Length: 491
Image 1: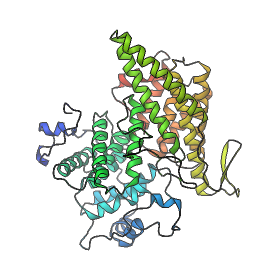
Image 2: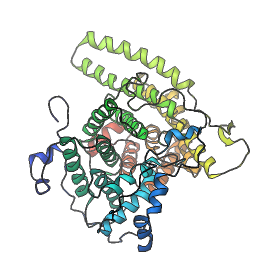
Image 3: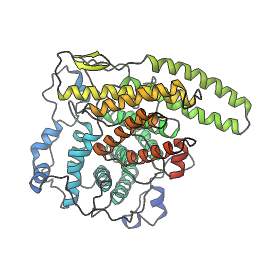
Image 4: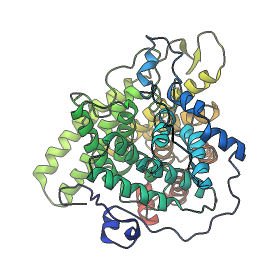
């Protein structure tokens, strides 16, 4: 990091990646020495499946034009893929590396489905990113995808010919080159955001690079907006999501423009979504996200207040305390009155959401999971607010009441057979304060389901911290996390 907070993305040669000072500036890491299981690629299809995926140009047309069936005035078109007119280059050929093909297959067919809440009308992490890989065989986006896939498989015990950190470093090198040479900022931004997902979800060791990645993404986003060439709306949401989640995880101030200042519109929801539209990344919690942003700001101010108190600065600490209490009161009221927006053709009944016609369809299960996911966030946010801003003890009814509600909704998400992505933050916050046998059982069962269905490293780390926190009621999860030597981002 430079003195002004900018990350140092300097161009380095491939041979110098692990040894030069520039490699450390880039946040590059040394490959781990562990030998993983030799049970290779058990989750992949056969060779014919791979040939179909990477050699059939019809798939490209499907991926880049999947939403043609939508009505012209459909509100879902706000998430339509901007690459509908692209065709693969006539000389494009899949990589000679079978490993690369298998990792791309894993990203396309597994990972891209695990990091969204909805795939209607498209999955943006599949339909917007895969065409870029078709266009370039050596882009930082390609290596970011390979790093993400490789790390996810390494966490399941797979032995790979090339490690995830090798791909990670090659992506960083490509990003550095792109930024130095004025390459397409959108493609560079996508690569960095993919590395943010890598850092948050699948990196085994704690990384200092998350904040610098978010800073680089924010600068690129401003550059793209200034040029009026921004096309990928989902990048706004992905960056905004992790900006807030990083803030809630670390109590660092959010980096992006606050919600309500939409002159630059850098990543946060604007007003109510159109009726019937479901955000693939935020689901039914889209209108809750500005409140979570405010909670992140409040937590960062609490850290500033603690520093002022420790320094004996009574004037500053008093001013901060008054501002914090005022903000907490308005935020508490907003969180308590917030409700998810019910999509068209759905109704609320007996604390659940159902189709008006009573049918149980796959779409209904998805909506139901998103509904309970949003409520889990709401009650976890209230829990965090009562604990941090009001100093409520663990056994206070405001803490335990919100613990039970948050965990109940987390359980409803997993039992709905719908998507379970982005559930870790409310689950962890509630589990860390759980004291009753019933609540701890719900937390344990939900963690087990997430580990089985998602396979992300941060879920494993979070589960370990919770178990250690439960074993010693005098230690907070923050103390346990520090003792274990890593920082979790609850994406």
